[in-house]
Image 1 (cartoon, one colour):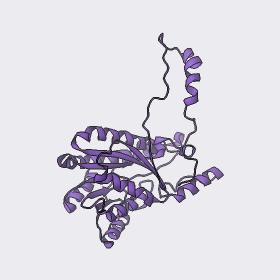
Image 2: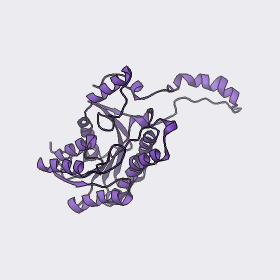
Image 3: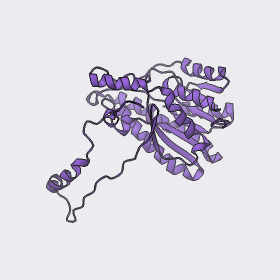
Image 4: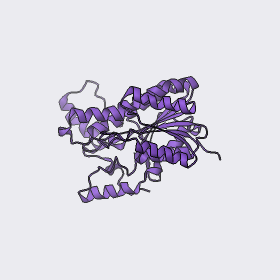
Length: 305
């Protein structure tokens, strides 16, 4: 078989380090020309450094692949557009966009500042909008294209101290769904991936209690390169009929997530009151309640496979 991305041009945001770097290296090995975007900021979004993106691009070229570095901040619409413009100017087209860039400003809810909220939403959600919007005219014109957006179990399930990040990442799912529906008639796909992998982004997970230490030990088993094959598949023509889905990768396990759907229903033809809700509805629904303190460790209590 040939390479799955031969002749394709793929733009990957946040590709200088961690998961993004592994995605860039793998897509290049599958034949893609890669735009390696990364402004080289700190985990909280501060500063900037051209080295990560340039190093990844150089490594791809040194291995015989095609790549250029781009240092744009996805939170800025004009800078985000330069990622796509660079792809078209250098390689003549754009076939897939991988929205992987993200920052963290973890703070327990009652201490979260507006700035903590705003900065995380701008990069993790608005950044996805900006880059995707810039690619859309090209995708429409060529009647093809693939968006691969990175979400998180912090949004799909929930996590402590990440109200900003969780909101952004669940927002990415809703955005992807809308893109998939709006763009289906022109042959454009949009899917999400929730990655489990040890990286700079997950290294902030606390490891103080025995339970937390066990969780971190599990995370450290899951290397970032395990995410890359699914990205290559979704970016390639092999996935031409796959859209509007939420996948997850946990070491060698790939999962399909459900979307929110009704799980219980109860009707009272004369209408409900607060008392009847308390006395009848809630006792019937309670066995189906999600646990109030649920995080991903409760959903995935087993060791990575």
